Image (cartoon, rainbow, N blue to C red; front, side):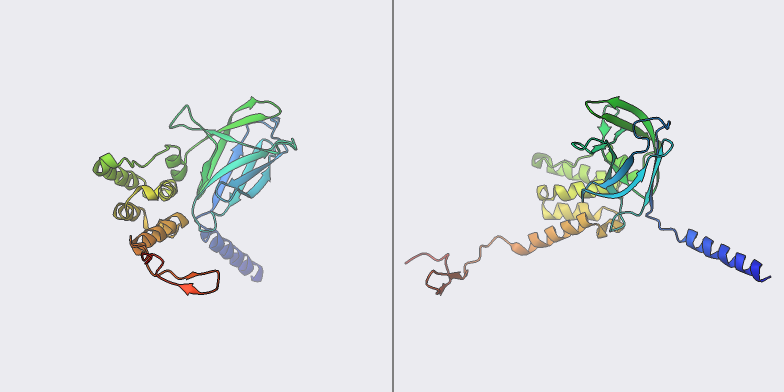
Length: 253
């Protein structure tokens, strides 16, 4: 009876931890469809595109590899690349590519490591000088990678400001969850006036307000509102003799 009780307790603990599985867990699997490719036995690395650091690694075994990790330090999906070791000390790592199903002539070098499972299947291996170019297809694009593969851009032409403002807002309205669009807006924030920028920022889903890109735009808007246009006229300056003078903007008498 005691053994049965213990077994039930262990089962309940397992179910508890399974149900508490983090919702930002990233799972990326790769299938080379053969155990005889040039990647067999080699290590592959998941690289954070922003920090330039390898955040996970595994070895290709029987034509397969698997990354399983959490999202980035803030819990958000992050732009990532997968590299494989080449065996060449002069060029030890080479990036893996992906077919873009939206823009079929595009070959991508980055994806988004996002919550859920991403399945990669070998498309082709192209021989190159001293190494090979490895290209995968993605079975089903995640929502973050799907937006990134569209290569969307905000419009900033000042001569068409009203039409551009409507277009930019509609862009975010279609993909309010997009980390890619949020970071693109942050990179181009100086192209917008404060009012327009704040309006675009507010269109993103509230959970993204904790993202570093959003916080940078908040700081930018706050600084823009506090600086003003007047140059300070009472600036203290230390002269070579050690004395301090003020009012350097006043006309010399």
